[in-house]
Image (cartoon, rainbow, N blue to C red; front, side):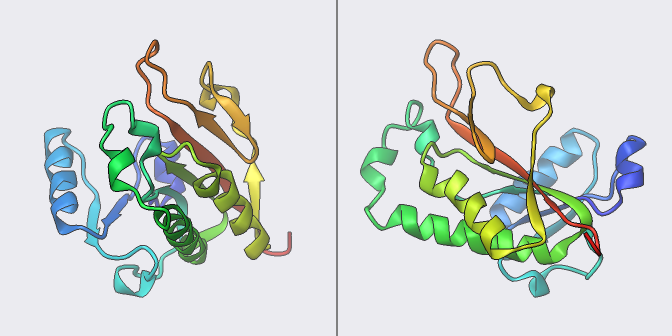
Length: 184
């Protein structure tokens, strides 16, 4: 999550990294140290901003949402055995809750990028469509050419990559939404 867009455009940014798992936050800290970068690190639930957010709106938010991981089945075939019928609807509900909470932290004119390593529409474009339907201030953003990857499938309002053994890629989905400015 980025709070200062002027610094972002100028080569720097005030970055906040959040995860519900303290062990993952420790890994983020190790990576930041290795890369000589800094960020405000928080352990918290993205669905409950009161537990970590200082009230300063973010200009950019990346939501790398928990998902079924169906896009990485090629590398992790055990996923087929680990998933249960109720998992996908539960993930979709959690993803939408995270996105709706993130909207409250996004500044007017701010953008949010949503991503999953899923190939399932229920977790991808349907979640983004549900967000747009539930939050009138949010609208999809057409992604510019550099964000379009060869072989990707445009699935409004986002882009779906399918697993490819030949290209060595995993399945992945991403979509960008923007919060309307006041009076828009």
